[in-house]
Image (tube, rainbow, N blue to C red; front, side, top):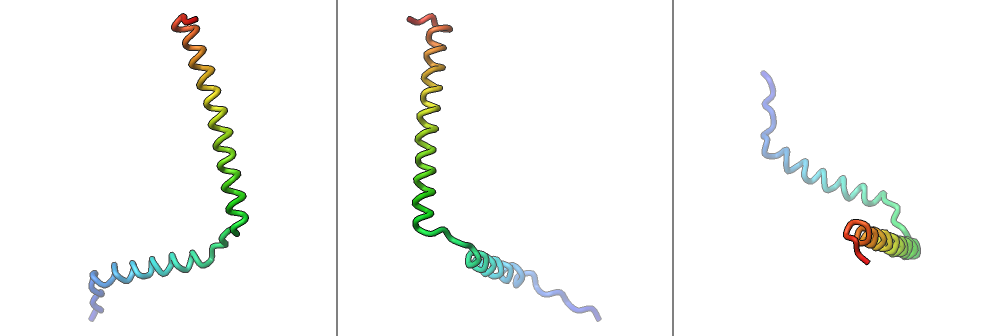
Length: 75
């Protein structure tokens, strides 16, 4: 006689717990940055955001002035 398959209700629960234990296992393998690396990289990101904000603001201002003078015939 063929063996009866296990009930479907036990499989999803088992997979859920396996999923979470796999996540914990992977997080233990992660090499986390030191506090000093985190601060340094955060400051780099903030600095680049500020520089890009200034550059994009200048480009936006330049295009708005160009449109105002050329297309709208402003002063």
